Image (spheres, rainbow, N blue to C red):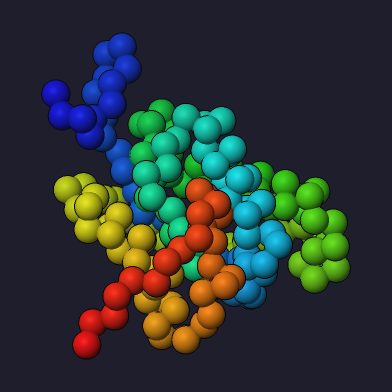
Amino acid sequence: MSQDKNSLAHTTWNCKYHIVFAPKYRRQAIYGKIKQDIGVILRQLCERKGVEIIEATACVNHIHMLVSIPPKISVSSFVGYLKGKSSLMIFDRHSNLKYRYGNRKFWCTGYYVDTVGRNKKAIQEYIRNQIQDDIVAEQLSLLEYTDPFTGEEVRKSKRKK
């Protein structure tokens, strides 16, 4: 049996998904003080549902996640749970946001999801390098880049010449 597969009593499964979602109006509110809290909240909610975060990053105006979701949970119900509960938790921790984002809705209505299949390493690499691509494209400073899921500083990769 491969290490990529999980198993229950009578089921073997390998369900990995690339999920992308954004804050309402694509505002860059996931940076600054609440970026770390959003990472903690998303990790906590994934643990509650038994979902493994394989790779995740918070870009300037959206979040990429590569997750392994058990087959007993549908992708749409998981994303609805993740966005709904995290929105409530964000507004509980940061009550000043309710004036900017009325009626406790932090995330956009839609999301992007794709099955990973055998492309797990390519998608992991894509998510890992997403912030570096944003840094090069928008020439932002490195001082504000810390990974909300690990708390580590993101280092600039070598640019191709």
